[in-house]
Image (tube, rainbow, N blue to C red; front, top):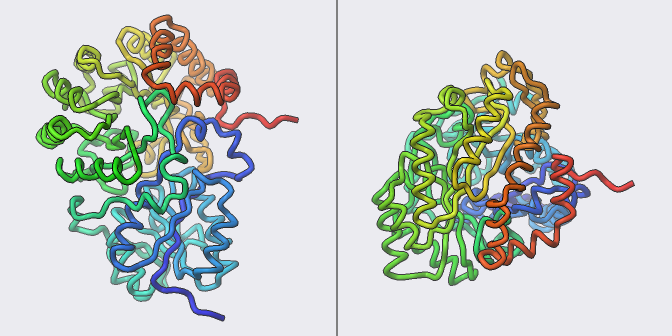
Length: 484
C-alpha cells in the first residue's frame, strides 16, 4: 500500500447535517460566509510547503464524494476540521469515514468548541486524534512537520499518551497578524460568487467577509473566548488597505464585511485606514461591528466618507437590568445616543439582540421591543441565546433554567435553553411576534423598499427564495418541512 503524504492535510469545513437537507436550510439562503479560518490556515501552511486543499461542505453540501476523491488521489497524512458546536459531530462522522478509507490518516480538530472542551473531546470521541486549542497556525504546522510524532513537544495541542488525553498548554507568544499572508481565498471552490452576505446587508455584489483582528478585551457572559481568550490583536491600517486592494484586483470584490468583534477598538488604526480609503479610493464599501463606547460623531463621519455602509451594534436586550447581568457598560441611554449618531451621519444600522438570556421574562422581551422600535434601527438580528462551552454562563447554566445540550442543534436558531419562569412555547411565540412586529412597521417597510436601488442584488435573492422566507416567518424553523 502506498504511503501517506506527510506534507499534506485536507482541511474540511463540515455542514453540520445531512446534505439532503441543505436546500431546506433557511440560514444557507440568507448567508454563506467563507471559512476564513481555514483559508488563513491554508495560506500559512502553503507558505511553508505544506499542501492544504480546502473542502467547504457548507458552500458545497454535496462535497462528500470530492473528499473521498482527494483522500484516494492525494493520500494526505492528516485531515483537519474547523468546527462550531453544531458542526462538530458532522466533522467526527467525516473523520471516521476518512479513517475507514485511508487507514493511518490522523484527524485534527480546531475551533471554539474543541478549544473549550479540550481533553473531554478525546475522552469521548476515539475518532479524534488531536485537538488544536487556541490559535492554530504554528501548532498545526509543528504537528505536521513532525509527522504527528512526539506531540508532547507541540504547544497548544491535546493528544493521547499512555495515561489518556494530555493538553500541552497554550502558546505564550501569539502571532503578529501583519506577518500572515492573506487567506487562500482561491482554494475555496466557487469563490466569491458561491458566498453571500446576509440579504439587505450590502449594496453591491460580489461581496465577502474579512477578519482584521483576533480576540476581544471584554468578558460578556454569553461569549466563548476559548480560542483567543481576552487578548486583542489587529492588522495595521496599511495591511488592511492592501488586503482590500488584493480582493478587489484578484476577485472583483466590491463590498466587505469586517467580521471582527471590535472593529473600532483602536481608534488610530481606523482613522488611518479610513484616510487611506479616502485618499486612494478602491471603489469599495464596507460594514463593521462596533461597541458604542468606541465610536463618536467625528469618527463616524470619517468612516462614512471612507465607504462605511452599515454598522452592527451589540444591543442584546432593551432591559437594562438584564443587560447589566451579562455585560459591562450596560448603559442603554448611551447606546441609544450612539445609534442616533450613526443614523445622523447616514450609515445604515443593524442591531444585534438575543432572546432567552438567563433572567429573561415576558416584561424584559417587551422592553426590548419598545427600545428597538423607539430607535432609528434599519435592520436587526434576533438570535436565540445558546450557552456554548467556553462561555462563562456554560459552567452554571443548569441552575439558571433548563438546558437541552444537543450539540447539533446549538446554532442559535432554537431555544435549547429556557430561563426560569419561561417556557419554550412562550419564547417561540414572542420570538415570532418580535420579528413580525418589526417587519410590519411602515418605516421599516419603506426602508426595505429603498433597497430596490440601494441593494438590488438583495431583492433578487429575496424574490428568488420568497417561499422559503414566508415559511420561516410562519414556522420559526431553520429547516423547512419536507413535502410529503
